[in-house]
Image 1 (cartoon, rainbow, N blue to C red):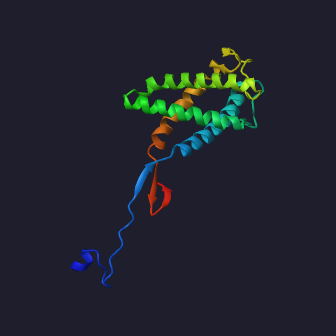
Image 2: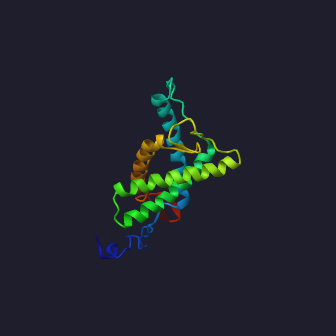
Image 3: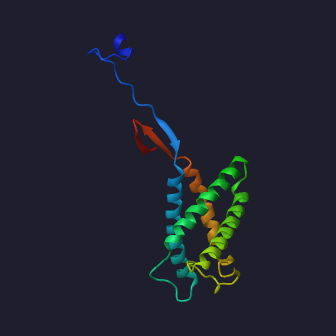
Amino acid sequence: MSVSEANGIKPNGKRRSEPPEKVMTPLPAWARFYFYGMHGLLDEVVFTALFDLFLEPGGNSQLKGCSTLTSFFLYGSCTFLVEQLFVYCVRRGYSLIYRLPVYVLFVYIWELSWGLVLRQFGLCSWDYSHYPLNLLGLITLVYAPGWMVLCVLQDLIYGYIFSLHVVDTDHKVKLA
């Protein structure tokens, strides 16, 4: 390599353009909310299909699961707020064994609160009054093992979500 090439000058006498500077920012809040809402819808459909297959009389051999569009907003907002709990707890060094009961308690409070609000407008799509250990038909401890599994999964997903970044090079945005 010649001296001029080392100084950034091409053999034709023109300067080489420097590669664009990479600017990495965390995944934006709206993208995380969207992911959490869609993930919650999928979880609910899969959970209802499998729960009915194994635990309902007559089963569910067709694996039909169900959800509603309001669930997108409920799961998106709940998971987004639990994300803040995750950050708070991880920064303080709390292990998953301590975070898990906090997550599950928050989920139950969220489901009960929104169930009460939605019921006032006739929009509540769930009724657990036929299950034992239910409160007002809006929450049931029968689902506690499922919530625990989903909270552990979500805890792992948070670690992955926070490893994602948006890369802005030359005003083009792409995921890193």
